[in-house]
Length: 414
Image 1 (cartoon, rainbow, N blue to C red):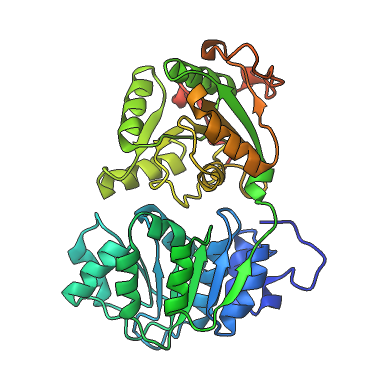
Image 2: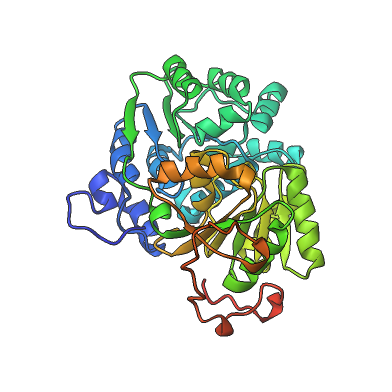
């Protein structure tokens, strides 16, 4: 979070959050709210429906978690809070954030419900005291059809990453879930962008919503040094390896456009001796959770992933992002590089661009309002007219362990 600032809203208590939760934030070294938290928390505490447009890395999770926790009545054993997310990983991440705020004394019980888990185990938990459910649309609808979840007492519904949920085809599911909740519920919709489908959803199901739009530049962009490596498709993999060997990421995420390309690249880099694994929708949930745990624990140092699989992931210590396949729009680019440069830390992002990618690169640079620095890599063989790199080996590479020798690396960034 940001350093303390001298203004009337520099403490969560000023926003109406009780000491029971602010003390937990202090334990996490979180003392000052971000802009989206400053704007959204008072509105949600007041009972307003809220549409919040805020990009990843702006602190939006606590912007809805804290008001939700304030509203839970632990003397009731019903589901009072429902958070719907597009991916299993984001559901798990939000659940972990929630549990990090809770204690045995709080009396608040949370359940994450998503596909790939043992459904019978989820049913047993639902039969116990659960106050907040964090769920993906498919699994939640499964429980609704089975009659194993009762949403009639939900007082606050949160739709997180709404644009992404609709982008991957969950509109019908989301509407079916909303119809299972009471008309009197409070609704909070958080989205990085506001496409027509999201606006229409809000119009149909929200009551006089208040708008929150964080217009300040994204913190993660400001904290991230961004480079372009001009190459060809045939030479791209070797160029990636050379950049990885030079910059020596502590934790790095490599983005590919499809699940097949993720798997292929992961296999080839493993064969070259890199400490890497893959994350995409075709993996079993158990495998996805194992991969993410190893990555969070820095047992893995490289993660090859698709955009959907990595949506909203917040992993401490990600130092580098590699756009192996160039993003095809500005939002995807911001989402990807937002995985690094978080919480005041610096990060680096490298985008590999072939000649056929020039239109996408132009789109990204236009959105940023500047030309990205070119980095020359010997194997990339960039065009003769490309901008000469001003990049040098800035970090004293002799002191940094190799990504090919994970056993020598220590968790010195945690």
